[in-house]
Amino acid sequence: MLVLNATYEPINVCTVRRATVLLLKAKAEVLEEGNGDLHWARGSLPRPVVIRLITYVRVPRDPHRRKITRRAVFARDGWQCQYCGAKTALTVDHVIPRSKGGGSDWENIVASCAPCNRRKGDRLPHQINMHPRVKPRTPGAHIFIQLASPTIPAMWRQYLSLPEAA
Image 1 (tube, rainbow, N blue to C red):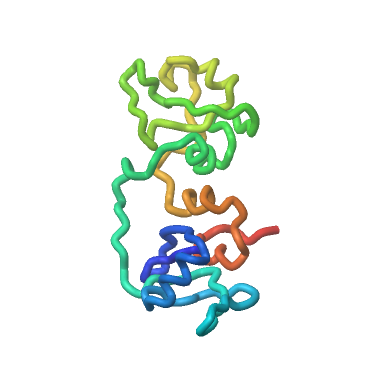
Image 2: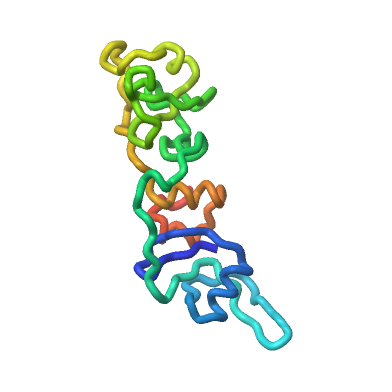
């Protein structure tokens, strides 16, 4: 289930069970329903697909709290090398190498294919004329939602600002 904040901002993915608890405690409302109902001894409920929290929940915006993982970097960069556009043999590369003082943060890490990563080595982008195609930045919440649920249901797309499926 996709969970939206009171402001309709996507914040999480949860299980049907967790969504049901939030609904029964009146902490959330159903925005999109799936096929069928959820039944229990004393009642039933439409199967939620998208729920919205009734009260606003402050979500930390500290970029250091968003864990940097290889999969998150690849997803942010569209699963392609930021130097040549290749989609195979992906690794992660520090734009400013750590040996030259670069940090391990979202603004300095990009997806790179193995050949580009080897070619760049520990040199600075201007030394070898290899600059990322897109300036690296902290990804939005939708990247982490895509990682939590690799197949995005069509009903979620309008809330995630994703293009319609072809």
